[in-house]
Length: 252
Ligand code: IPE
Ligand code: IPE
Ligand code: MG
Image (cartoon, rainbow, N blue to C red; front, side, top):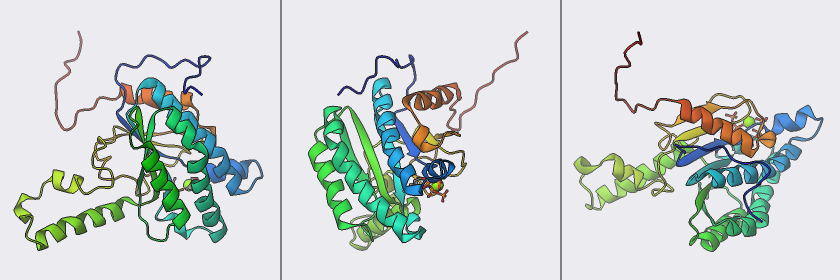
């Protein structure tokens, strides 16, 4: 099945973000608005993820980081946590062939701590089966926390110092970058959060330090390729200066 939908053509974009991070939020509210259990909202979110991946492929995005389960989500009701574990495992299994067909490389960012063994093995199997694919990278962030990632990176750098392999004076941003879960992914250009919440909730703080933030009111299960393209239009209207400055003299 092609990732294209000819009845819904993509707009022409001249400046496409290389790496998009998405906080897929609003599943519970989507379900509750319909008098359904929160888990029904998670189920409905699966289609939205595939929609967004295909919409991103159409416009030539290189990487998507999708926040599927945070290290803070263990605080939820055990029933919901159980559901989310099984659901993440099943989505990876169910969608693997489709992603392979689309030439998408799947990688995992997250901690093994507390994560179900079956989820870890499904993530690792997806990584192995798609490691040769190169149209786009889908970075599945499962049991991910940004501060935790920085702590782990710091520990690895500290060990190198202790072993005498690294001079602390020589530590640079590149040194830390090289210890992140996905060191070869470009920085996040566009950071999207659905559902109207305006916070990053511990998602990719290092990688997003110069990202453009777009907060969409759409609840995640209602998110489509068109919603993604709207956020890309918003991204394109921004003036990214990265700390530089230039005068724009008034006309007339
Ligand atoms: C996001 O939807 C999915 C996960 C955190 C796994 P929520 O479950 O947070 O939905 P809301 O925010 O309660 O609507
Ligand atoms: C962030 O959403 C985590 C995921 C989408 C996986 P949450 O709904 O858990 O975040 P908070 O509680 O609003 O910060
Ligand atoms: Mg939420």
